[in-house]
Image (cartoon, rainbow, N blue to C red; front, top):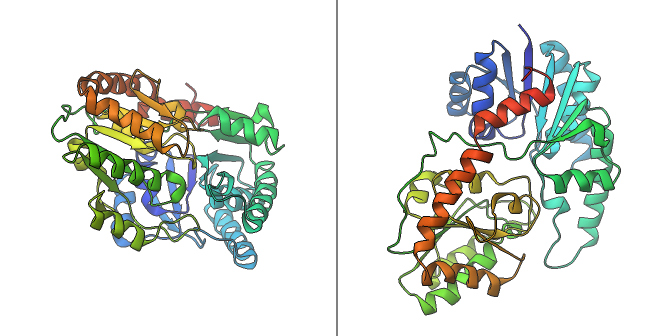
Length: 377
């Protein structure tokens, strides 16, 4: 029996993002080790229920601390030598860098790095490029180049990210592949009837400025003056990372009557109430999972013409693409649904069809397993 070690910086993501992949590997008679630094008893139980073995290791999810990161890499190397997996699959920035290096040092035969978007470091700030951010990008780029040179296979979710890494000399084109979205379970995220009254615009994301949260709030403020009965709902928890939006700012939007903010909650019940899903992001997304879920439930999408985001919308068919940080364009796109509510239904049907064609998790996982050579197609 072959062993696959999946290395993440967040236990929750192993269930939410990698759950179907873990189940498929277990069904194919692989032993799956699920490595994360932040397990609690509930998540440990959920991962075990998938058929995988939860494994704790030490890693700071955010921030750069050279001595701590070096020590964690050494510890992970020792752990992987003891576990002796045949394949190591790492995703998210720090697991890709330090997990891939540890797997190489531990002699893991097959090392897979999965780049799920370029994130905060490679996103262009609306406040210009600070010296700190430029230095962080320089350091992360060098670490990426070192780690990816030790990976056997590098998987991207969109062409823009692969092209950027190729341009920067961080990957060899022949060792990299583009997967597309990681996909969603189309049975779990089934199509729901369209919602016309009240017309409800939903944004679900981590509360990072680069996700376009402030632009969504500004557009909602303008539209509330025109259509007071329209709803604008923001889902997501506060973030401690540099791009995080503060509690006071979110509470101000709520007190002003611009947005509803239930916080970090399960998305599915709120998507049932939504008419249109909105993600005005300029964060370097891979292919946003939240948008794939909204499409699977038959919701039109308004998003930006930015890497990763543009993979989810055919402009004018299942929604609209708008320029990044362009509040007037965002208002105009949202206003189209208010003025032509029938678009909610017709574009929602198109979203569901696109989800079935592009974002079926079973197809995505089969292609991923074929790419990394674990299971032949």
